[in-house]
Length: 500
View (spheres, helix red, strand yellow):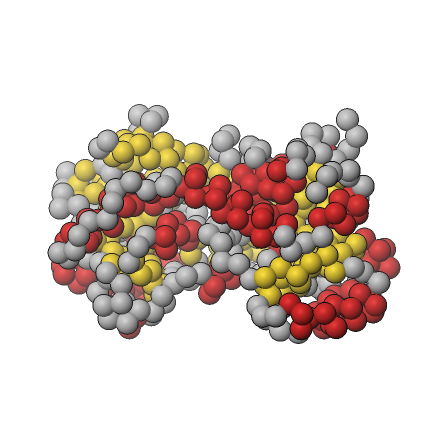
């Protein structure tokens, strides 16, 4: 079969909507009968996805693979960087931990080594699929980084991709960002840009017409569409998205159930909390300062890329005492992954996996000890709690053991292991199980528990599954983007004959 056609979505800046456009195109191409696959050579993300064979890739590529109706593999994101500490990241190669490296060493020593890895993945995908949807990173016009940039134009050249440049009009200066980006590209790079997309538009479309005509005349590049802002429930991968998520600062009594999540400095996989946004009469707050804590019905300690550092931050802010006080007042507390480890009594780092090898006292809400080891565990998980069958995934370095029988295991896993711990009064729960709340029946039961505790009527127990919700979101996004893009022109750019 001939090599796949390639289209690459690049942006004038970070968080302009590249991932969403790629996700939409994956679903559109799939709907149109094409065998399509997502690809991002190098991804820096706090939220990751675990493939069926236990590889760790960027969450966006996992989402895009699902939208494309294909099984996610590490070829779709061969290099993943997970920020760990200031100027330090974990480097993951083909889904497995490679090493921890500072930014300067990565730029000077590793980037060139990464190219053969990336090229092999591209060639594998080209020989397997009809269309590759490549996603860029940040901006292709960062002139101080271009000689080591393996995520933008170098990938476009490697895959012979038609580039579509996305600009975010919501942040302002959209035409300047387009012109400035193109001006900083060299001639061969500009020649690859075949179309422009104006994203996150709010207002009257007609008011843009003069500007669109001007930018087309000025650049010689067609505007393929203006995509209105859409609030669609698809998981984010980067902490930049935290500011745009639907976290609330409710007035007293505004929501029947108050859910709070602590914004740890090195927070990761924060999409665990997303399902609560869909629960009726539930307010979800992101807490960065102890003065914002209040007395929530449910407090969530999320995952983190550096448990020891974020535990020290919690204590420095006074959250340790405040959390102990909430436990006494009846707030339900759930810790996930790093948050689970913090709930214990002792954290040991003898091999300096987490930092300098020191030990630390945890919050002491669960009788357990965690030892950090270098062998990272990444695996999809299935477990049961009572009659509920739950699916999720596991990503962590620590190994945790229960010290006393004051708690019970939270889940019995399908592979025979036990996961997590739950206090006998069921008020404190810790688990390594990411994706717990995406099991919607479990989450509705939890919300109803909180409602009944406050004297409120329980909500209906029948809820739409997470798979159904994601499918609805992909279809909504695809229809929204298709109706606002010139798909006929996109297929012409790709030299693909499809009836649209």
